[in-house]
Length: 218
Image (cartoon, rainbow, N blue to C red; front, top):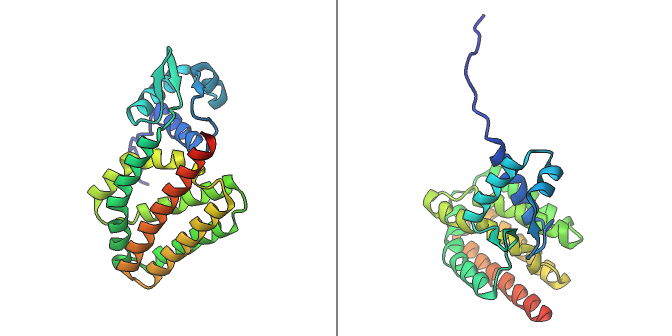
């Protein structure tokens, strides 16, 4: 009998805490401007304060939290911040989905259809945001250009943070459903140009609804 003495390296606790905090930020457990108190987070996540502090510093480097007034806070992204993020998306994501359409497999399509169907079934803001985020993760994982993926990954958490604000209106959620349905259809047809056009429209629509929400709050 062969004994396996391999030492398997588990992710550090701070990395697990950081991932959990990313999920909480993405799903709007915390609102923009909220103070993130280490002791409260440690209690909530059943860990000590040290991994929470380490995770918060990493999230600060990623632009997901900010330090001010002696503590960490959820940042308020300005309209300019969002415009810059969407400009990057507009430059890269249409090409990314165009590339995917040329290499998409039957297994990929099965996952995309499942993600589409989850979004179609979502009937509120929270479920719609979660389904949109999940679908985005599916196609991001299939980008064949790793450097392109690395660039998008740098901003992906910030994209996710504004996702809910682009889905508050029923018409906005319908626009997102239509966009995902059209993108899956383009993938099914392996139509690279159609995929490009759909993504351009999808990004423009999301920015439009975000701007409307900002105007409503002003």
